[in-house]
Length: 326
Image (cartoon, rainbow, N blue to C red; front, top):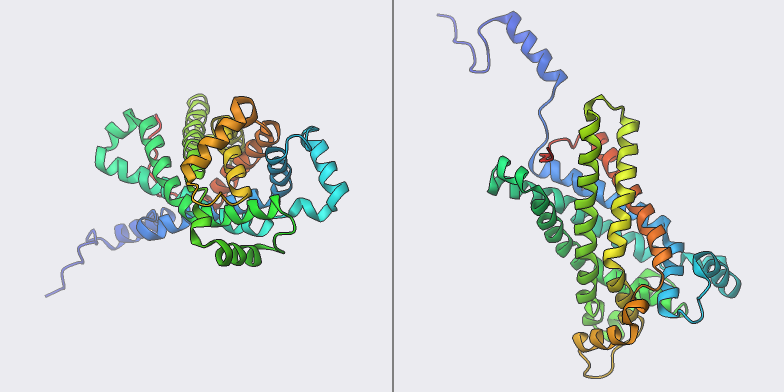
């Protein structure tokens, strides 16, 4: 008696061959750890590359925030001031902690966003999630950013100390070690409150505006009809608008973060009391010091992030995420 065909077989050799050819041409989408590790890697690279490349802008922006009286000539003037007084190398101060910190943060942020978005879809059901997609985008990005900031905070504290005190240490490892030795682990997280206050609204605005702008674009043109280059261009444009929105929303907290990480608090002074004191000293106008540099910086890096993220996802075959845009 002939053996029964395997369950996957159609019972016909010719049909089985056609089925195998079709499967090879359209491989199964990735899922689980294979998928989300690719999202995380793409996010890590896009954030590390863009933030690292814009270190000089961040140095000038931070100087303007910390000493607006001295650095009062705008972004270009600030570059000239830093280079003339400290040399060209000074504008790359903090590159190490910036690249390392945002590599970690990008992995948690982008990978976490995709993960929490999928969990929302699983919990709510596709239709409900799609009908309430703005809330899904906001909740997913906020949750992802919370965990991303736990990874970022120590390195961001080190970066700001290096930028605000150029003689503090020679680089990432020495600066990190000096803070740990002299001030303890708590010093790395003295800015955790303001970094959440800054980064969570920033990330919520960044993702929801990007999703909404992309959705508007793809309502007028079929995404599948666009070339890979045109899809990258859409990501760039959507990311630029998202970056401007995110910068405006998070600027006051960014200024407070720079201030609180500049120096140690007084003995017995808590983080909350320090934040209240800094907010009173700054006022609304002071909290937007350096906004020009930050709009340029955040707009550029957000556009670059989404373009790089999209391209790396495609290159890695990370196409298994569920889209809920209509």
